[in-house]
Length: 184
Image (cartoon, rainbow, N blue to C red; front, side):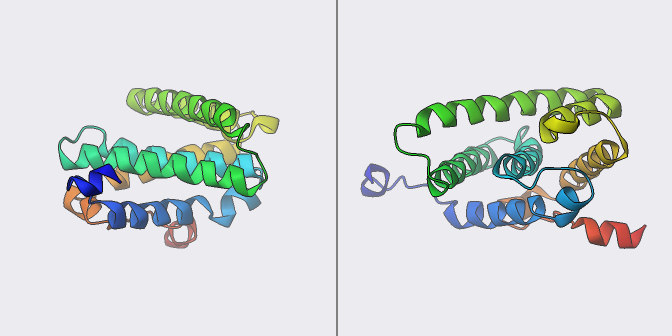
């Protein structure tokens, strides 16, 4: 409210909403849950949402100025959505802060492990991190974990190839898996 009164309200609301809608749509692709062993549970959906949010934030991390502000607003929107989801599943006001701290630690821990593996170009380490985090009941590296790691690497490369101007306008391409498989 004070930002609005003093003319400093964040101006990226529509862009952030559009980017976040694309992140959510990408995270909900059935192949993750149907074929790659991601649990179709609130935690499994959080993990996939986190993977996709990480990839978009990773694209913006080395940028400055308005892109850095956009990344912060997208992060805030992500955690706001997570908090709303906790409330929707019946977590009361007293339990929200504790769970949000835990989920934030989880997210940032994953950001670190995924970033490190990607920076080293270590496909096995990425597959291990994804299997451990996304599929905790089946943390072994199998074909599904490797497919997910390849998807993450491909999507990261695709995002890095997208012009910053497009992202700043809310235009992003998170290509659905079905179209990737059809093209192969």
